[in-house]
Structure formats: C-alpha cells, structure tokens
Length: 478
Image (cartoon, rainbow, N blue to C red; front, side, top):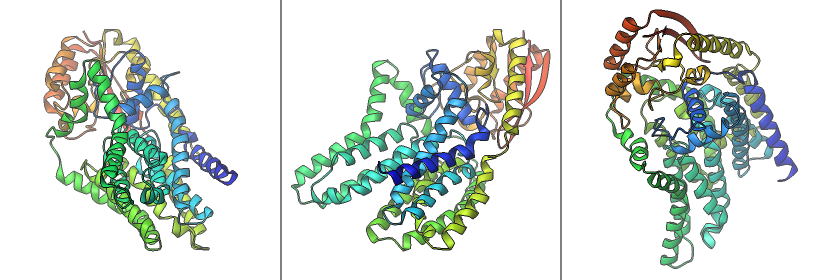
C-alpha cells in the first residue's frame, strides 16, 4: 500500500476513534447489538445459533460477535471492532471515489461515510457497520476488474469480490440484493468478452458458486450437525411468517427516513451527473440494489438505511472536489453529524454502566439462581447477572412482540408457558411498551405470574443511547 493510501486510512481510523471513544464500554447502546453480544458470549459456553439461541440474523454475524467476545463478554470488544470497520469502510469508499475524483475529494467522501453512521443508528455495532466493509471491497474489486472482464474474463480479483459479497450475505440476508447486482454486472461484462459462449457460461457459473460458497458451507455445517431445519427456518421460514404489519407506522418511518436521506441523495445526484457513463451506470445499479434491500423489509428503521451510505457517499465525492464548496460542505457535515455519536461526553456511558451494574446486582441477590426471564429489557442482563438463557428465544422481542409470534421453530405462547412453569426467580419487564404491537397473550401470562409469585419489586432505568428502558424487576419469585 502506498504512503498516501496509508495516510488516508490512518486519518479515517482516527476520525472513527474520535467519534466513538466516548461510547466505549456502553453496555446498552442499542438492543440489537446488546443481544448480539449476549449471543456471542453464550456461544463460548457452547450455545449454537438457531438451536440454543434463536434469531433471523445469519451465522456470520453471530460468528463475528463470537470473535468479539472471545476474551471478555464486555461490549468493548465489538465497539473497538466497530471503530476499525467503520474507518476501514470509509477508506474503501475513498478508494472507490478515487476512480472519478482527486484524492482530497475522495478522502472527504470517506469521511462523510464515517460521520454519517451515527445519524442512522450506526454509532455501535449494527450489522451493516460490519458487512458494509466486505460489500464495499467487493464493489471496488469489480470496478477495477471491468476492463479484464470485457477482455479476457474474470481474474482472481473478480472471484474474490464474489466471495466477499457472499460473506456479506452471511452477516445480513438483505445484502443478497447488492451481491446479486455485483454478480449480474460482472456477468454482463463477461458476456461481452470475445470468448465462446460455453466458456462464458462456465465462468459465470463459477462466479455464482464463489458468491454462494460462504452460505453453502454454513448450511452444510448445520446439516452435518443435524440442525439444518433450524437454520432453514431462521434464514427462510421466519421471513415468510405473517406478522401484524402496521402500515401507518411503517409509512411514517419511511417518510422520516426519506427526508433524512434527501441531502445525501442530492449530493450523490450531483456526482452521478458528472461521472463517465460507465461509472454512472454501475453506481446507479448499486444504489438501486441497496434501495431494494432497504424496502425488502418494510419497517424502515433508521439503521436499515446504513447500506445505502456506501454508494451514496462514494457517488457524492464530486461535490467535495469543488474548490470552495467542498471544504465548507465537509465542515458543515462534521458539525451536523458528529453530535449523533456524543463524541465529547462520556456521561451517558458512565451512567448506563452504573445502572446496568445496579440492575444486575439486584437480580443476582434476589433470585436469579432460580432463573431469570428478561421479557422486556436489555438482553445483556443475562451476561451482566451471570444467568443462563431460559429459552432459545433470549431476544426479548421474540417473546413480547406480536410481529415475532411463532416466527421461530417454537410456539411462542407455549414457550413462555414452559418458562413460567419452571418458576424463574426474577422476571424483568418494562414500564412502557417498547415493541408495538405487544403480544397480549404472552404479556398476560408474564404479568399474572409476576403478580402472583414475585413479592419483591424494583424499578430502575437502564438507558440506551437514544432512549431509556424503565425496567420493573419482579424478584424473589416462588
């Protein structure tokens, strides 16, 4: 790697560190990554995803969090990794942008990516913070291989791009759309090469196999272990379960998300209009694929837009090449976007640590040896209190959210009934409904159990970065 590239990488890693330093150690940044950390820690005790701990997320994400928790179940592991991944992804964005802009503008595009993550709930360890890196690398390799694909067919870089895109799919299923675009784009260029049709078809099939290999290896591993059905339900069947989709709420979230994305889309549109046609066609295809990934799960949470940031910021680089506008715009972006990370205020982290420790200590001292059920609240309480999962449905929304009813291989109501029949010593619920619509059937069972069997009650707020979980801890249950 040449010195300018190393300098750019160092600058973007430093920016990522500055933005995230105040959040290091926060035990409850966001419920999703708190669960991934909890699952990763459980894997070190022998838990197998989809069998002992269930979720729709692909195995690659669990494997990453297994690595992050290899030395400690502390959230610090994934948060340090997120610093590296976000800075490295910003650097790859800048390498892509170098194909159509000078270095300074390309570096600004990479910085915009790093700065933008916090606005879309990417301040911690949401899955796109990690899978955006292999997807961006795959796109860069395909872009650099265009001439070779047209002339002589796929080279090692093209095959590596397919493998990287396949790895991204094992971290988040919706990456399939971006990966498919890259594969189809490579196949289109290859179709124009001066080779026999049979040879082209073999090469296209080999590229597809390279992209599918990571998923095929995981599926094969589960089949050999005798748990293919659990893996298949999580990856396919659970996504076909009919949930109580709330159209009005989803459309409201979509409108809000669309408004937030408008400035990024405007900068990208400016860049697209000034690109060479070949570059523009690739970027439009990539953006379209990322957008399909966003709308394929029509709940429109802010972090669902994180994959869009890679092509949007890369396409925006031309804006930053304007002599006066570019630096001023980057400065404005820094002022507006950096506060989403709370970069110079560690009080939120310290307070969350104190509250989590207080809640975990109370749980340990008041019945957790007889079992803990976190029906609503931070799943990291299982790690902090040292209590085992009462069920593979350890992610609280799988028990309390009506949309998640019977999404796994387990009947949700029957599983809650089984847990309560075991007389857990502590039950954690939330004062306010977090995941609407609530599963009224399981909520009623948990409430009745708590009132009848749990004489000790403590209320404590355990904050996330963007909200507070006001917990009601029912303890000493008999």
